[in-house]
Length: 224
Ligand code: NI
Picture (tube, rainbow, N blue to C red):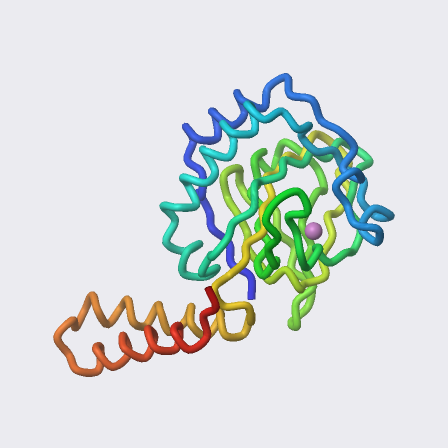
C-alpha cells in the first residue's frame, strides 16, 4: 500500500527550502548507491555541506513531526537524514529496490518505509514520474510541490527519465515500529476506524473495544 500526503510542506516551508538550496552544489548520485543500484542510477545529489543540510533537515523533520497521516501510516521509530536529489534532462533511475540497511556512517537502521517529497511543480518538468510496482500493477506518482508519497521499501521502483526541466525531490527512509507492511496497513485502517469512533461515540463500549484492540495489536507487533 502506498499513501500520498498532499501539502506535507506548506508554501512558506517550500520557499525556505528553495532559498536554502539556491546555489548549492550537487554531485553524482552514484556515490551514495549500492552496487546494483549504481548501474541504473543517473541523478545528482546535494553535496555534503553540513550547515546547509541542517537547515533543510530542520524544515522537513518539523513538518513530518506534525503530520498525523505520516505518523499513523509509517509508525516511525527512526527517520534517516534526508537526501536531496536532482534530475536534469536525460537523467533517470532504473528499476531497483532500496538498501535494506542504511546508516553506514552512524547508527544503522532497517528501511521499512521509503518517502519521496516533491519539491518542484509537476508542470516545471516533463517525465520524472516515480513508478512503483505494487501487487495491483504499476503506480505512477508525480505530485504537486510539497506533496509526499510513502511506500514499503521492499517495492521495486524506478524514476522515469526527465525530458525537460528539473525534478527536485527530498528522500528519506524510515524504520517503523512495525516492520511488516501488511500489519502496518491493518493497523492504519483500524486506527482510522478507532479515530472516527472516538470522535463520534466516545462513550460507546464498542468504541472503547476498538481503541483497546488497536493499542494491544500495536503492543503485540511493535519492536522498539
Ligand atoms: Ni529508490
